[in-house]
Image (cartoon, rainbow, N blue to C red; front, side):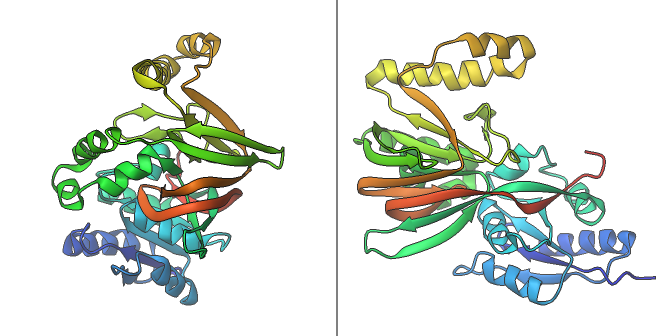
Amino acid sequence: MTSTRRAALVYNPIKVDLDALRAAVTAEEQAAGWAETLWLETEIDDPGQGQAKKALDEGVDLVIAAGGDGTVRAVAEVLHESGVPLALLPSGTGNLLARNLDLTLDDVGNSLHTAFQGENRPVDLGLIRIRHQDDTVSQHAYLVMAGLGLDAKMLAATDDDLKAKVGWLAYAKAIAQVLGEKNHLRIRYNLDAKGNRSVRANSIMIGNCGSLPANILLLPEAAIDDGIFDIVILRPEGFIGWVQIVVKIFWENGVLRRTTAGRRLAGATKEVRALNYLKGKELVMRLSKPEEIELDGDGFGQAVALKTWVSPGGVLIRVPADA
């Protein structure tokens, strides 16, 4: 007997093999005894929010996001506090949330099995209100990371066609271009209402997850369900500063912190001036001039100020039942 439970699948048509995906979804929904899935295609000017709202209006029990980080972020924004879980069908070059949850990246059948027969895991959702140069304010959600400075400029400079062909290697060209520019941010911030502070930095990243592609552990203490942000401020001064950052991120975070003994050794090392970590639940920030901002790898224009805060357990993510 077919269940009354029904899923919706929000998919980016340029990132999925639609015929193969339909066959795989049909097999898994039937095996789980679910009703026929509702299919909703994203559009250039609607990367997932409108489709997720339609899915909720239809009363579905599950929303599957098939696409890159942008599709996942857009769907999660709508599912915030709805009680309807989100399942991931990773596609694209990043898949940052899936990586941080240790979900399967290249196995459609396994991902769909998790969607229909997995269990729900509450994870934190970052919410952000951005004030733009024209004084308009927009509000968004993010699951992995918000960034200002070098990383946002790098994303803005990345050639989308090249990225589609060679994936993350496309960022190398953008990095070289951006490093040739002056990238200092001048920021006044207030973390958890503890008073205003000023900082001059190259980049600031506010993270809900710690790992990036290429096994880069940027925020070693970040947890996706601890109710707080981990924040990193990069402020290198010349070549030595960049060396300190490379050692800290690639050696201490990337190698030492992978083992128990290494974590003890890394914990004993001193903080370096070029890289500082903070933690908090709410961050208010004002910039001296408009700066590029990115959320989960997508650019959101330029910001002159922002407020970001954590919604603890704000979205339910489908994970394997035996996780």
